[in-house]
Length: 322
Image (tube, rainbow, N blue to C red; front, top):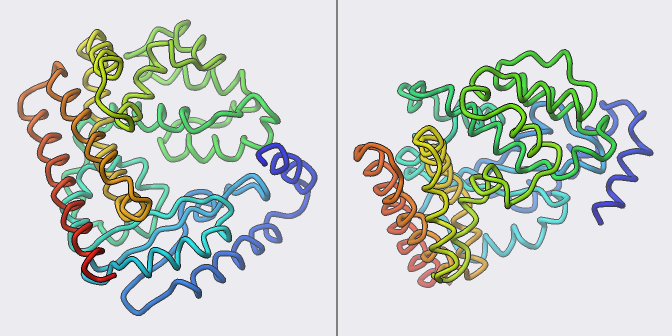
C-alpha cells in the first residue's frame, strides 16, 4: 500500500497544490460532517494545516475537542466507521477539562504543528519556555523516528523537512536531498552538544534500533508488551547513557504522557487497557532509574499516575453509557 501511495505521489507531483489540497479538504469535510455533534470541535493539523501535504503520500491528521461527559462508545464507533476518509491519518482527542492538566507535558514545537490547538490553550502555556533547546532536540528526534523513507524520492519529503526546520527556527535553505538533510541536522548547535556528528550521521544514514539513538527513539515503545526480563533489561540499557541523554529521555517521557492522553479514547475503544497499564508500569520503572532530579521524577510520575486514573474513569464511563 505504501508503494502505491508513493507512485500516486510521484505521478501527481506536478499538479498544483491548490487542486490536490482541495481534494483533501473535501475528504476532511465529509469525515467531519459524519462525526460532528454539538459537543465537539473538529479540525485538521500537521501537513494540511501547515500546507506541506503531498497528494497520495500525506494523510489527514485530525484533532477532536470534546467534553468528558460526552464521550461514549457509539461515538468512537462512528469515528472508526469513517476513519478511512482520513487516508490513515491519526485522530487525537483533547478531553475537556482534563486537557488543561496535561497540556504542560506537550512539546512546544509539536504544538506548532497544530495551530488551532495552540490557540485554544494559549492561556495555559505561560511556563512553556523551560529547557526549550532540549525540547527542540526531542522534537527533531521524533520527526526523524517518523521518517522511514527519507532515502526514497526525497523530493517528495522536501516540503515536510522544510516545514520541520521552520518550526524549530533553523535555517532550511540548504536542504535539497537526504545528504544535505543529514548534514543540516548534524550541524544544529544543540544537536552537536548532545551527539557526536559522525555517530549521528551514521545513524541518520542507516537507522537501527541497535544504535544508541535508535534505543532512545524506541524508549516509549517498550511498554506495549508484558513485563519480562527482556523488557526490563532494555529499560536498564537506557540508563547507561550520559546524564545529558537522561535529560532527553525525561522530556521524551513528558511527551509520552501527552501522547497517551490524546490517544486514550482510541486505546479504550481498541480494548488495550491492560497493555496500556503495563505500558505505564514500564514507563514508571524507567523514570525511577533515570539520573535526573527528584522534582523531575515526581513531575513525570504524577503525570503517569493521573493518566492511569483518567483511563480507569473513562473505561467505567464507556461501560456505563453503552
